[in-house]
Length: 463
Ligand SMILES: *[C@@H]1O[C@H](CO)[C@@H](O)[C@H](O)[C@H]1NC(C)=O
Ligand SMILES: *[C@@H]1O[C@H](CO)[C@@H](O)[C@H](O)[C@H]1NC(C)=O
Ligand SMILES: *[C@@H]1O[C@H](CO)[C@@H](O)[C@H](O)[C@H]1NC(C)=O
Image (cartoon, rainbow, N blue to C red; front, side, top):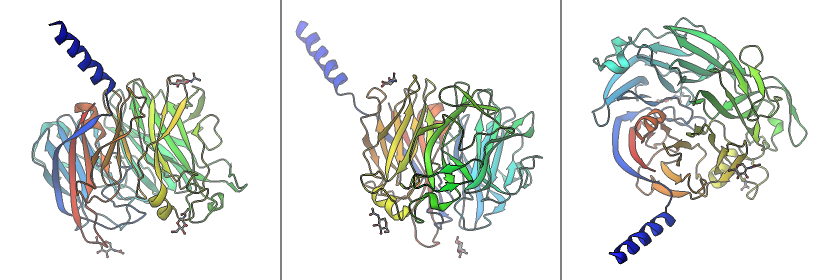
């Protein structure tokens, strides 16, 4: 008996010492459409973009997905979780142009159970519709007539005519918000609107194009936009990381580079009205005094515009309220001047995990897996704050909180598994939170404009 206990003790000691990075296990892989629209523009495919909030979304015990089919029609699908069959409906809207920015974004307003859809814009007017009340939870038949007419306003709110990156987020007190950019790349503002008691109202711009940036090579630029890695509510705060994209291309060492520089962080404790930097100093007020490039104390990782830094990767917030972001660029050991961002990122770019500790320190750690792609990665955290990063082509690398997020391990290799995914994917963040399942919307790679399958692959996260 004593021996048995000794051996049991040894076993647990060994198990504890060998505690490894989390694994994932494949639950299912389902085809949504054999013929999704396919074309590559701006290195991306319109159905699967890193910045989509959300292209696939769980609310209550239903999951929703959206994409454009080969006829250009916007399709919305629904299934009952965990394993119901997908049902489609077609919205009366066709993708207006072959531009990968023009994604479909889904949201649900908890107060009335309406499903909101914003789509098909790139510095143009947005298209928007919302469903009848209760559709998100009623399970009523899935037919397009349950959605209202498509408008160029958000409800009755006029958001202007130069909209990009529509995203829906839900506040801690269950209001739906709409995050978007007005203006254009290199000269744009991030904006916020809010849905309350059935009406959309403007909150205002919270990061503007103004201010002056001087690059390491001494060039100044007087306009830009903040590209965000996400807009994430957790424990009553909204957290935003991002990177600035300068208008003056000469801030970069090469015209073939990207003018993105630095990683910023700030947060709001009042649903996006006012903003604080990591040191808790008030730095901005939406509408009247938005954050800009000269705002103090918002850069948490400095990087000049010479490294092909990507915009709009992803972020999550852990259970203690600390931000975690993924950024990617070509590290200096490969070159100090990216001259062709697409080629050089594909050869050399690495993802980095940037996270805040409770004492306010930011740590940046290189994830030891190459991107082998131009595009972006997605980070999600499980309930125990272990990290899962979906690299291009659905390669999932994981790291445990217990290791301080240092034990990066390849947990699933979509390349070795023959998924044949186009690089970038979009993920269902709500489902990770509600049930610890990671659903990834991906599309098969193709060539030219030959349509390809749109799929959802699901994994259990084994933290
Ligand atoms: C970046 O890509 C360009 C175009 O392919 C190439 O000429 C250049 O050598 C690359 N840079 C490095 C550091 O390899
Ligand atoms: C802040 O916390 C981190 C993580 O616990 C630690 O590594 C770091 O040394 C701390 N920094 C300071 C300045 O206390
Ligand atoms: C846009 O993509 C479609 C395929 O979806 C293709 O048939 C069409 O030629 C493309 N248009 C342009 C202008 O490239």
